[in-house]
Length: 111
Image 1 (cartoon, rainbow, N blue to C red):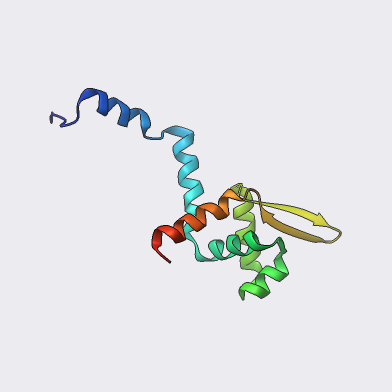
Image 2: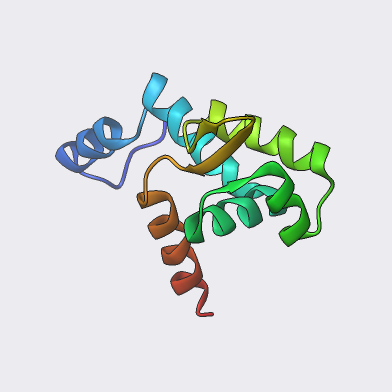
């Protein structure tokens, strides 16, 4: 068995501070949303304005089926909400913190 260079207190803090179980799963699922270019484009557009699938696909120059699929994924992930207005469904960010996280990423990258 290898000896830790960390003292027991620090070792305990690290062990207790690393996410486990549902928290770990939730974080992995949340951040995996940002690993797809199409989803990041959709989230960026929705940070500016709520939009329907047709408008999103036209503005982002993406296939409507692709946009619909990704919106379903984003909704299931808890980042996007939808609201029906007659026959049209409008999508928007569930919480503005999603945009803040993306902006922090841009800031971190230095762009």
